[in-house]
Image 1: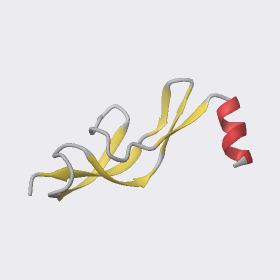
Image 2: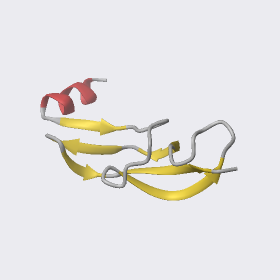
Image 3: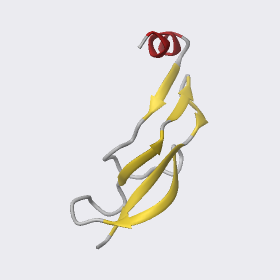
Length: 69
């Protein structure tokens, strides 16, 4: 928790898009998976969180995107 606080003070924010619509500017899709519960085109699972520094992307979040079942 201390590390997270220090990173936020330096302007580094986590990108954790679980349940949000897929955004190719912030997310890297590694797979698509059919899902009845999630809306198609939304992030189903976050494999690896991403990071931004003062609003600029350092590392995209690696995600699995929901597809139509």
